[in-house]
Length: 303
Ligand SMILES: Nc1ncnc2c1ncn2[C@@H]1O[C@H](COP(=O)(O)OP(=O)(O)OP(=O)(O)O)[C@@H](O)[C@H]1O
Image 1 (tube, rainbow, N blue to C red):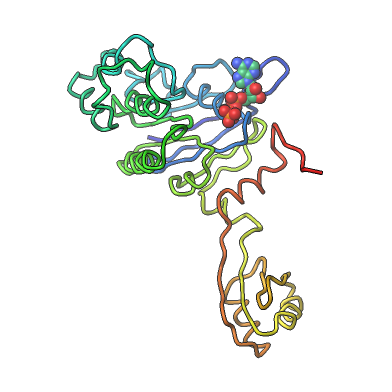
Image 2: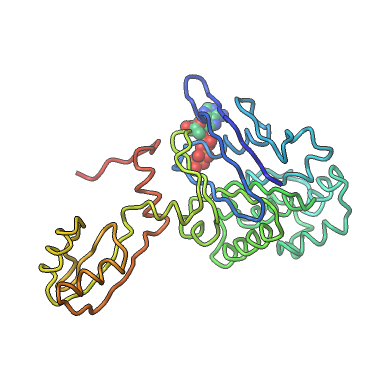
């Protein structure tokens, strides 16, 4: 199933929280949804599900969600880790949801086991930790084995083992040919989990591309080369129009060049290369750089 969000928009009073946001989510891929605080991620997800009124539309395999016979089998969503009935046990909560989409109790027990909530399934979610709430939310979302999973910050409140489990689970889910759309502010986690990215800032789309392409646009990607005479190499690089800066006693960082080019220039300068390394920006570096003009709540630099 392909999901197409087109022209999504929403205002709260005079504030444009989401402004003409369009993207396509592909099956078999995890798409990460990134944006600074208050950039409109939750509102976008709510618009996609028809939970908020606004502009634009989202098509699931060319049809609006409500035109599908059983919408719950098309999309499973988990937007808020604390949105459970306080006095119903986790198992009963899931059974209620299951009944609405024609899912049997066997599947409820299977899902409880899958997300690791067996020990507390008879308890009320009121006493659940945030992490247990996230597991229950995921269980609700996958009950009907939907073609599309929409998750808002599912790793929030999870310990490192649980985060790793969640990542593997979502990758495997996408691996069965389904769509996974997941927001997270944990950049290192997103870097390990996402194939594609949708990035928004101040309600507007900033990027929609494979994660590797997004990171490649960062100016923090460079080549580090260690040579005995860094000054000479910097001159030779400059003669080829490449900008380079000294790093430490005997190393040079070169922007916008491949290791092949840097190695060849060093060779023609008669310099033995002691180390040659392509350094890739982290997703966090790329994100901070590429969204710096789009911070809703920017902090001032310390004076
Ligand atoms: N119900 C509402 N009433 C008024 N303003 C709202 C409402 N919901 C969201 N907003 C505003 O719309 C903007 C987008 O909010 P949204 O929650 O979608 O952002 P977000 O990217 O999910 O943020 P975060 O990462 O902090 O959760 C924010 O400026 C927020 O203050």
